[in-house]
Image (tube, rainbow, N blue to C red; front, side, top):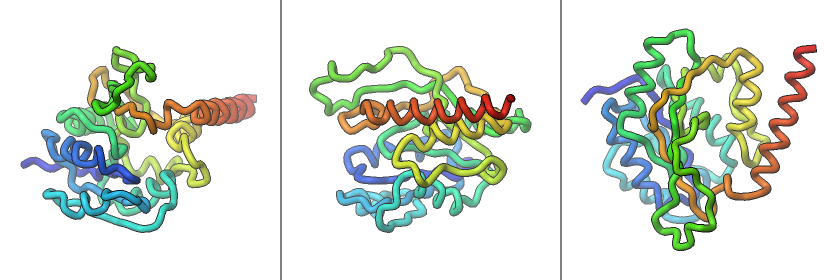
Length: 226
């Protein structure tokens, strides 16, 4: 089986319902990653036993809860490969995800990262699907789950803000785009985002936080251009 120099990072918190499906999508890749790093961020359900009994090799770390951004930064520090991919513990990938993006970055050394289209879907166990607004068409996936990035980019542009309780990626992408972050989005669905009752993107407070972050970064951009 062909292996490519990618570290996959999966932060886990109370993900027992979806964790196996998430992990399976990693190990069904047409080109497998060199390592899969999983940090259990103080789960209170059976997530840790599921990880410990998973049949494929994982680098498992478990400790009390520190929050998502701190967990991501910690995992980046553990990563031993040139490229890093992130997968939320309830999402999954197209089998060609890593191969397509790795080849694209090999062909374009000027890029820091590569994204793809993302398809959102309502989790099958949801009974009242009408409560969610989910687009039928794929969306431009400038998000962690759809990204493959060179690890050196974090060294050059910085990591996630561990002071944030949510919207870590929104803040990060808004920040690094002010500092010559170079990327392209492949016109292909390579990642799938699960929508469920506890999905952060459905909460009004989450959307308000995003608006606040974007406004702050826009002000920074205006000051930079003065």
